[in-house]
Amino acid sequence: QVQLQESGPGLARPSETLSLICSVSGFSIRSGYYWAWIRQPPGKGLEWIGSTYHSGDTYYNPSLRGRVTLSVDTSKNQFSLKLDSVTAADTAVYYCARRAFSGYDHYYFDSWGQGTLVAVSS
Amino acid sequence: DIQMTQSPSSLSASVGDRVTITCRASQSISSYLNWYQLKPGKAPQLLIYAASSLQNGVPSRFSGSGSGTDFTLTINALQPEDFATYYCQQSRRSPYNFGQGTKLEIK
Image (cartoon, rainbow over all chains, first blue to last red; front, top):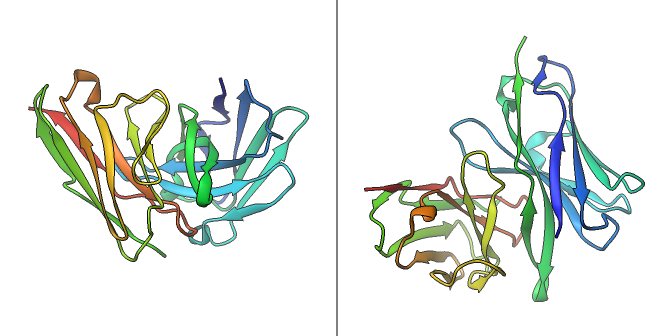
């Protein structure tokens, strides 16, 4: 059974880079699925950040205006998130997830980590 | 972008009740609609994908319906563990936006 676990600093300074890692167990990250990051600011709804494939194919939410980079480390079965130039508005619980699919290109996030809170503060 | 609007934003119900949550897309998304359950401190759970397909392991009291722009999530015979926040999400086109959530509380 696939399990995902987010890790990284719980605090980021304004204007700096937020970095998180998602460790995947019970499933190979090279097994034909995309991997995603999703966040939830306090008291607000969910926001899809982006998705990545082990080949390097990656796509992002335009709302993050080029500040985000996703990457995959197949040797460690991990994928990562970097968000540049953070502000208080980037304070959120960050989740990693697996993007599964069914026929007719139906995609959905079928496995999630528990999430990690990152606060942006000086 | 495709905007997703859920209603109500909160809902009070009792164990054993039947509840319905609605989700409306700003344009047609066919059946590219998923539902998730979130509880504090726990990994979110996929309930329904492709508008009406029940995810493996999810109790059959959960069901989804709809197509185009209007969708519903129905929970029959509410159980204590169902009190949580529910989100719809469209997967028709990037960015894959979620609704603002519906918090289901115990009456």
